Image (cartoon, rainbow, N blue to C red; front, side, top):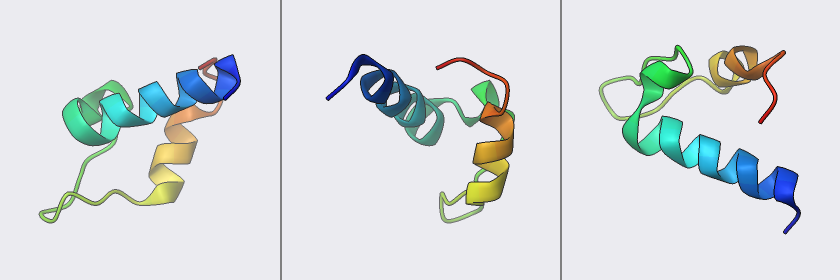
Amino acid sequence: MSTSNTNTSKYLSLVLRHKPEAAGVTLDENGWVEIDSLYISKVGRDV
């Protein structure tokens, strides 16, 4: 896995498992997030 993929994977794990507020997203009552919200939160951010 490339460094970029590893960094992206770690970021997604952080956001989806521990700190959704780090990406400015809100999980629903079942722990899901709209993929568009997650993508928009990453635009312009270097992972």
